[in-house]
Length: 472
Ligand code: AMP
Ligand code: MG
Image (cartoon, rainbow, N blue to C red; front, top):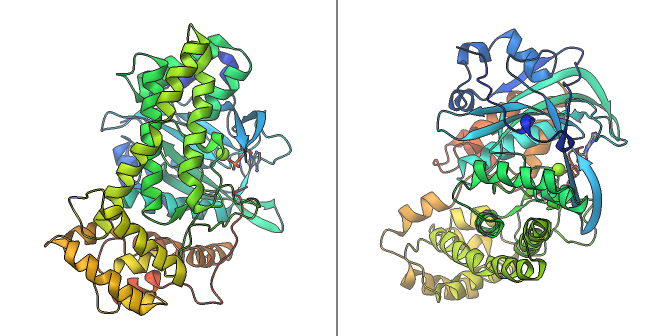
């Protein structure tokens, strides 16, 4: 059995789309975590996965047989501003595998050293963002949300310099692809039709084999983004940096930088320290996802024979976003209320609850998790209005509401104050809190045993995290 059964295709695309180079070796690799279930899905030999050679591969110190390492070129609108050239500045794609489920997936190191796209960055990552991405992406997966995943995390034995000297680490990320809206944008903006067409053909073969035109592909991306963001909204998830380079055309959540799950609910909530205008506030996420789809549409225009006709049909396709989003949003939130056959009128019931939650700063996760219990009213400041809402709900919910709700409402999400705690322990070399939290957040719907209950508690006033920082 080969260690990693690479089957690379991006590396065969036109050379201007990437730079071939290996990761930069590190001083002294050490394991933090290995995701054996995911390794088995990818067809990686589980015995090899535990070996010293595997540690070297996931640290960038050895090359795995069949790997064709490269850094991808892309561009982006960052906070709405056009940036004509970005790329993998701290990541290296080791290659692709066709997993045992038949789906092609990328295996990428993140924090693996400088590349031609690093600009002034050091190409490295410190431990904090690696632990955060591992825990949050695996929690997302456990909650059924499309996401990149974490295959491995290692320490490097080297320090990186941020606001302080911090221990370095590398995450191995797995994705259906790392093709972003910004990957299309870079070639379109350069007028590189060769690369744009090659990227389109590659992407469609990979993600939308049925799509025979740029418009069909666009529609598929719009549908995936609408579905994805509706699922984020159902979990109180704020991505934090929905730039077009962090928008995957495969529809996976990607780039867990300054992300956060809300504790106290408010639609205007922003965490990211760099999002001063609140562009990526919780309630703005659907509009931003649609805007990102419009940027993809613009980048696809050069593939069409007639510009004006392209603009017209692409506009129609982007405009399918609101209805698609609304439909998934309704079914997501209806299930959270134990309603299995949602009708348009249920929207008002859901919105009235969210208004009450926002008014009282209710904990998003615990409100839904405990809504059917006799302690439900504790989450609400105005108990009379909650009681009135509660009667409407009781009249509407399905007979089997409890079973529907149990599958729709996680008991445990990765809360920021707990992520901070596992990072602080990790800096001291103690990864036991990380592993305990990972176990808790990857079984989010299980009943709360006493050892899991601490992960369900909302932060105290002292614990609450109000700002998150980019994972650089
Ligand atoms: P992000 O906002 O995290 O999606 O990153 C935006 C861009 O900055 C991407 O092109 C990254 O590759 C690049 N970048 C972020 N951190 C670093 C770093 N430490 N070294 C080099 N490039 C980086
Ligand atoms: Mg990014």
